[in-house]
Length: 436
Image 1 (cartoon, helix red, strand yellow):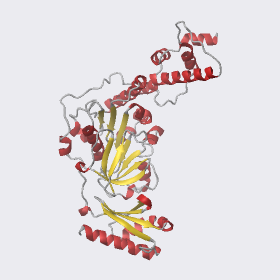
Image 2 (image 1 turned 90 degrees about the vertical axis):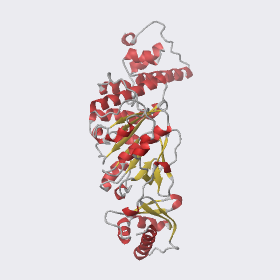
Image 3 (image 1 turned 90 degrees about the horizontal axis):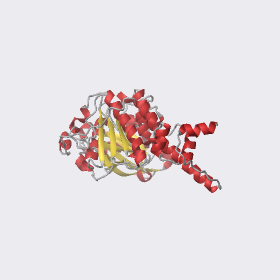
Image 4 (image 1 turned 60 degrees about the vertical axis):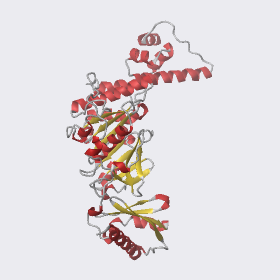
């Protein structure tokens, strides 16, 4: 069957069914304003009387049968652009074609092109946007999630120098199979990580790095922690805490997460920091509507109706769009810069992940102790001194100092002055005086 025959045939069948079932008349109740044949689907954009829209959107399976599609193929209905209703009709697999990375725009920075949407426009993810600093790619086996993860690594490495972007690549389940083509990238902050213990220490290092950057006021270079087959880690409590901490505040310090996983479960994404801060998702075909809700983070996304490899939903705070992800080949990765000297992180001191996370206090959830604030008010010293004196992380010390400074200003406005102690003192000095 030719492309033209398929398009004309299904468009006519859909029009006939809408008339027979709903008495919705073409050119009167609706108009087909465009028909776009993409790599995986034919998209019909309809301008339709809004009172008919809900009924049409509820007829996905009936329309699929009327169009003569195979049982594994279903029409997805969605809001289109400029007030239209989009009918996304899967094409037969013999009419599919791939999108190469050469068809996508490339520009320096953190805005990565992932593919094209149903109107053949580039689909972009901007990791510099505070609303979209991290990404979750999900889907069943063969849906293209690993290719997507490789695509982002390719984008970031090809568009940026190692001084601007560093990469940490993790795959403990398949021993680094997804990342072998990137093993000689000069952007690697560490050799490819294939061991669970080393992965945990690396995540702890990233949490501590956020603490260090908070003290120094740094957010550069950007560090991307990309984990393929992330379900192998997210199902274990010891990994959830550091991943949750990075998801919560990593964007403030230039540290980003790229997670690729098969069908994620509610338990796997149950940590509030992870679920809330993975607002950008690329979701491939899912096994069921229930699995689609967990993966997409929204109801009725239609991810269970996708066709297969590369056919994905890009879900961002601004909405949902169906895209075809570009295919990254070995020839593409062979053109990336290479080095014989890979960087190495010093991971020796990061065996105790709980201690690292507690000291950093990156979530800011722990309440401030009144005695800590009193010490900051009494001595007016810097963050490093407070952290050492109180045996707390630098982020927590920063919070204490900022609160004490704000309190001092507020009291000044009310006519009260706190005279700092001039003598050398300590936490014990202040608490002893308070109890005396």
